[in-house]
Image (cartoon, rainbow, N blue to C red; front, side, top):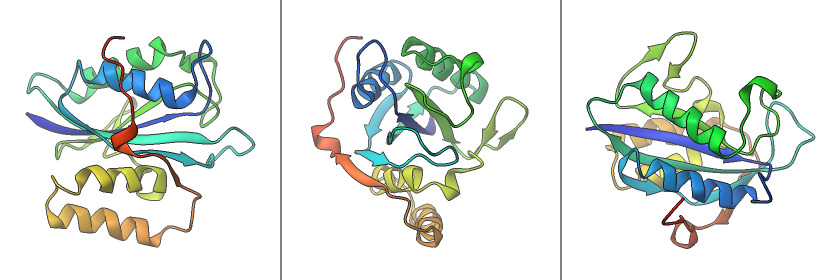
Length: 177
């Protein structure tokens, strides 16, 4: 089994479904792909890179992939899930509004750097909206060195307006999607 960390975000509705509910639906899909999923709280965050858009709702998911799952096959799967909930990568503004974004932050200890995928995610260390929920779900599972690395990254960042929106215990993941 390979531990996988995903970052999820949404800032637009899809077919009338609000962003936080889209995250729950995406998590239900991810439970079909990853084993022993742990879901962080949902955080509301000001948009980075492209301002002047709705706030994002962000969270992280930790789960375990079967040994047969590769980073690129997981990328194909998350792209499929994004498309189910309205993401159209061919017609969007990079870092702009989108109903669902799923980033592979970590895939075990693997490093990938090609035109389709970079792992660890190259911007995770500059994003409080990733580091805060990441530390939340790693608190019981990660070794002290890993937690210390991500805590140090977070301490170096300016306030990015990340606010708790929905505690993990109150986050609703649909049983059937």
